[in-house]
Length: 397
Image (cartoon, rainbow, N blue to C red; front, side, top):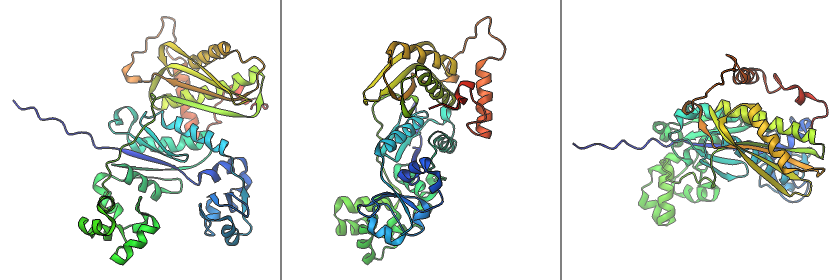
């Protein structure tokens, strides 16, 4: 008897793209600039690295010379770049993405691809994951992102572009041609303005016009490789894979103090804040973790870390925080000034695959029920709706 092999699952790729990333990070520190034109970069010399949407309304764009930007919008605010801050926010966003899959490719400091193929059973639908990511990025990092979902990286990237600002768009495989073909050809990822200019003498204005040209014609005009690539792009064909960095799936968070801190109580309060965020994400993703890692960065920018493997996987804040406290005691920072605190939980397993065995003296409703109830309240009313008393201190970092 012949056994027919099951067809491979349809690829599901997500592109998460930060909206006006550098400018958005600066607006966290300067909310008074939110409704006024501003950009990050040189004030009168150099280039614009990122502009907020009010500045874009005047025609200011990333990559534009500051001189031209100033002519277009003389009253705009200019912020010098802070690449340390941008790097830390980017790392925090990647930690959010790795909650849902280990297959995360950081394409740039403000953009990443996720391969969610076959992950629907454990993570939920791609659209649900995308909305959860958008909410977490907004709540934890204070910035907006746009999410595109498609059967490959090309379609996912273009869907994220179409979703901007602060939106989500999913393009099903059967919808790819209808989504791509009406768009201007310069919108096609991988084409750009210079290639679009070379295509115009061939009568190409839209992606549909490009798709109508025979592959052989494009190969004559642009060469065998580039011509073939253009033809595939026009039909939404992209075989490139999401290339994840080495490492296992994990859930993590980190925070840099406004001022370097030596008080152990303040450091441990920030550890608790990070643990609360990490474990709430774990519960949202329906995963438990077994290995807790504490990272400390000191004022001299040296970094140390230590890990502890628990007897059983957990998603409880108390369990993870107790492990973090043990690790802090082992690291013995003493009076050293601490610049940044990070918590990461690895060894993740789906909660449905684990039998949680209560102790004989455990109440009918314990900490897990209380924390899930708090998660529900926070999701409805915001991150400050339920907080631990120690994290409401006025002198928190």
